[in-house]
Amino acid sequence: MNSTPLLRVDGLTKTFRMYHLDSMLHAFEGVSFDLHEGEFLLLRGHNGAGKSTLLRTIWRSYLPVGGHVWYRSNHGDIDLANAADVDIALLRREEIGFVTQFLNARPRVAAQDIVAEPLLLAGTSQPEALDQARHWLDQFGVRPELWRAYPSTFSGGEQQKVNLARALILPQKLLLLDEPTASLDVGARAALVRRLSDLKAQGVAIIGVFHHPGDVAQLIDREINLNTKVVADQSEEEDNVAL
Ligand SMILES: Nc1ncnc2c1ncn2[C@@H]1O[C@H](COP(=O)(O)OP(=O)(O)OP(=O)(O)O)[C@@H](O)[C@H]1O
Image 1 (cartoon, helix red, strand yellow):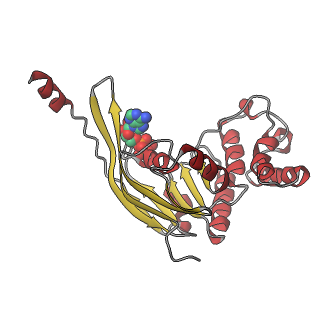
Image 2 (tube, rainbow, N blue to C red):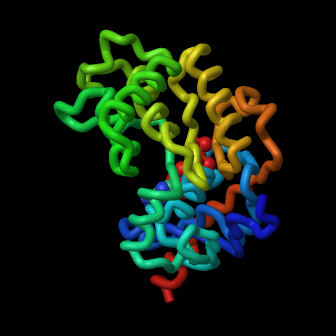
Image 3 (cartoon, protein in one colour):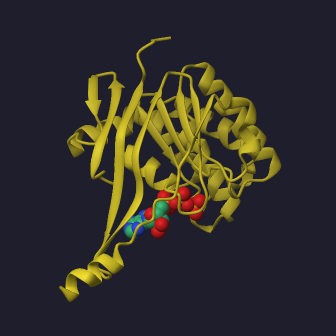
C-alpha cells in the first residue's frame, strides 16, 4: 500500500446561498482529514450536520466555497474542488463511486443490464458481464424472476439492492456511501458488509454515512463527527436592510 494519502481534504467549507431568504447557510466549515488506501472513514453527526453535503462536495455535485480535495488519481494528483467537469466525469467513470439509497432507475432497462453496465464500459465481454451481474443480484438477494424485469416497478429495498450491485460490481479506488443500508433487509445488509470488507482488503478507500453504524462496526478505521454550523444570518441581513 502507498503511504501517501489517496485523499487529502483540506479546510473544506460549504455554504448554501438561500436566495429566497437572502441569507447564507453554513453546511460545514474547515473540514480536514487524510484517507489512505484501504481505510474506512465513518462520518457522524446529527440530522443536518452536513454529512451528505460533505460526500456530495467530494463527489463534486456541489462546489465548495473554500478548501481543497486532493485526490491521487491514476492520471496524477488532482484537486476535486477545482477540477474541470470533464476530469470529474472521467474519475466518476473509472475511479470514484457514489452510492445513495436511491436508484436512478431508467425506463425499460432490465435489472441485470443496469448492474452489468459498468463492466461493459470497462471492456468486459457481454456474457461475462451478465454472469457477474446475476451473481451480484443473487448475493444481494434479488430474486431471479426479477433479473430481466425493469426496476422502476421494484420495491424500495429491491431497487436499493440493484443500486448496490451496480455500484459495487467493479472495485473503485474511492467509494462514497450515503446511508446505503437504509432500506435493506438483514440478508442484504450482511452481503453489503461482506462486499465492503473485500473491497477494503483490495485497497478501496471508503467514506460512509450509516444510519446504523453498528452494521459496519468491524470495518471502521476512523470517525469524523461533523458539528452543526447552521448560521442563517437573517438578523444581520435584516440589520443591513434597516441600515
Ligand atoms: N441544496 C441545498 N440547498 C440549501 N441547503 C441545503 C442543500 N442541501 C443541504 N442543505 C442544508 O445543509 C444542511 C446539511 O444537510 P445534509 O443533508 O448534509 O445533512 P446530514 O448530516 O446528511 O443530515 P441527515 O442526517 O438528516 O441526513 C442542512 O441544514 C440542509 O438543510
